[in-house]
Every structure is written in C-alpha cells, then in structure tokens.
Length: 314
Image (cartoon, rainbow, N blue to C red):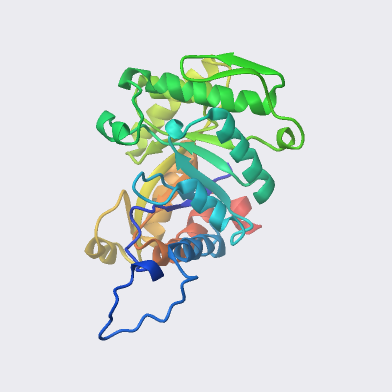
C-alpha cells in the first residue's frame, strides 16, 4: 500500500521570531543585521524545503485564526518546493464556495496540481462569533456539506445551479482553462456520527487523531462501511505528534508525543498504522524546522522500508 507522509507546519506553534517591523528601537548587545526583505515567510519556506529535502510527500499547513492564513502560506512556499503536495487547512466559513473553488483551481495551475484542501473542524461558538460566523452549532455540518457541494459543482459542471441554506448559485460553473485542472483532494477530520457521515459523502481522505491501533482499526472499518453505503471509496490518515531519538531512553528524557521512541520504534509504530489501512500520515514535532530534518532523515526511510518496500527500493 502506497503511503503519503506530510510534515505539519503550524503557524501557532512556530517560535516568535522578530521581523523588521517588530524590532526594538535600540539593541544594546546584539545587532540584527537582517534586511527588511526577510520575514516570517522565509522561516515557513525553510520548513517546507526541509520537508522536501528529507523526502516528505507534502506539507500540511494547520489553520490558526490569530496567525498567518494557511492558504497564503501554501501559495508562498509553492515555488520554493516544486515537488511537495501542499495542503492548507481552513474552515468552511471562509466565504463564497464559488470563489474558494476559483482560488483552488488557480492554485492548481500555479503549482501544477499540487494542492489539497483540508477543511478545518469548526471552532466553538464564542470563537466563531469573534470572526463574524454566526451559524448555529447544529448547522455546521450542513454548511460544510453545502460548501463542498458548490465548490465541486462549479468546477465540474456548467451550467451549475444550487440553492441551499447557505449557498446559492444560478447557472454558474467554470469555463476553460479553470475547469481543465483537477479539483484538490479533500481532507476532512473530526469525530462523531455527523462528521463521519460528512466524510463518507464528501472526503477523499478522512484524518483521524492519533489513537491506539485497535481503536483506529474499528473506526476505519466503520467509516469505510459508511462510505461504501454512499457509493464511495475514501482513504484514511492520521494526525500525530512524534518524538524520535536514537534510543527509547533518550526519547523519554526529551518529552512526550502521540508517537515516541527510538527511530526504529517510531518507524515500527507508523508501520503498524499502515498495516490497518492508514495511508496518509500528517506528522509534527517542535521545533518544526529542526525536527523535519530529524524525522525525514532517520524515521522516514525506516518507515518506508517496513510499510512500503517497493517505494523504498525505488
């Protein structure tokens, strides 16, 4: 089974790094000689290049409301990493589904089909209110379903007409060249019956949070049955923090994570997840730049040798 590995870039988790506009007026000891052209996006590009250099298949950019927009980050690093699949995460509250679809296919043309869409789980009602999103909790899944229905519809059908509770289109649809590129692969993640039903109907990949192998096996089987009942086939992934060191003892001294241990041990745990049907692995560790090199150099080759030997030998 072919596996896909993504390094996670989380703007909220990145350490604060002063930029030209944020520097104090006086610096008594250390003089910052960086030019105004260098900013936080250069750091994002470094992380993306680290993921590309060390063999990751993609970069998953986590949604964080108070921080840089995930889609802008993905577009900014696209040219710096011409091989990586770029998967920005964003909520369905971003606005027009038609315009979101246009942005997506424009990105596909820019990056030669390397865009994925990860629809973020909706925030709590208080957080949503702060950004002008007043949809009731019980209607959030329906809103996301309409968002994806319209986005796919205007991409694949012309004329496309839809009238729902949140989106309405009359005789829409893209013309060439926008309708000639592939729609991005859709990643969904959340728990609960409604969320699983949404994934069964609309996801290309459902991402589970890290959990014991037996728990994930049962979840995969249950969601797979729902997808088949809906006449669809979907793939499965996991989102996990990792902590890998040369030995289990060193890993225990360094801290905790969803998956932790020696390089061999972490690779074996990932391979065990692959064996139950997990194909997409979104991995994270802090500090992101340094750990991307570590995991990519010392864990990925071992993981692929165990889970995907044909690819490892290529």
